[in-house]
Image (cartoon, rainbow, N blue to C red):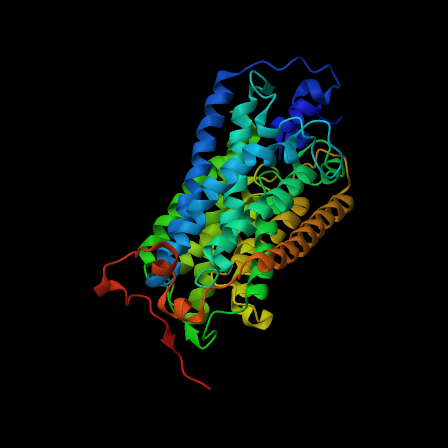
Length: 444
């Protein structure tokens, strides 16, 4: 199967046509000029809206897991990502990732400010729709990182770091993996909807940020118990709902491919949730609501790179293995000596790595004509590239931001909660602010 032309490849972004290309492509026939397809356009508009909903869903998920005194600050880190990345993606992020005329590492700059997209098609959908869909990915990628730094990072420092991270870490990595010019794309790396680009990069960046900022006061003796478990369940449900557009929308068409991605995005999280609850019950004696929510999110992460490359039965394997790896990563996280507050690395970094590797192991076709061993090697290279790029880049950016402003809030604000000091607001009335206060576990 020959490679897709640039237009089709950009429409497919994570796309599948590498693996499940149409008959004309398979026969080497000339590709007809793309024409607007109203069905594909309607599906992609819907998918973009679904993915946008995921970031407020993440805000609920993270907000419920934190203390009551910092719930607004925690949720605001997700909410501000929408505004910040939405503007930056328009200004430069899109063209860095997908601009024509680029090289193996960065896109061309002809689409600065989304110039040149009016009236154009990307595949069978308007290029504006494709740019909007991809913007939603960039938004939630940054929001994910916030879970590792809650309750101690200055809001302004997060915003500055987030803007730089989106432009200098996320956008180039998206180009490597999803642009037809990108070196990992040309190498045949398989990542249908963002295992490397989003989850590995965010998970590794979160871990680095936790190391650079240092642990919360009292960590690990003080347990920061989730203050509102119903919020956690609400957020997980919204994430699962939106993730249908996240994965199935990455087909860039209302197609059989989208249907496969949709069903595997149902199956893998279901299997992961059950697996997590089994592990939790076997060790702690009882299944928990937070465990169920965490398990399903881990399953969503693990299936993301593989969702249109594996069969439904294989999705069960992806979900179960991803949940097992992440569950034990959470149990052993103290060995890293990093206070990754909401286990972003364990749930997104580890599950993303597992999913990327299982994509190569379980894909029913690679589309690149590579033998299984070569495809696995390609997947390993893509994982390592994402880890190094996001890890080193995030460390450098955090140190640069630290030269401009302090990264952490003062100790008094951290203990009292950041909501009042950062936003002059609080999530609950005064008689409710004791909810979720740290619990002293004892010890020296």
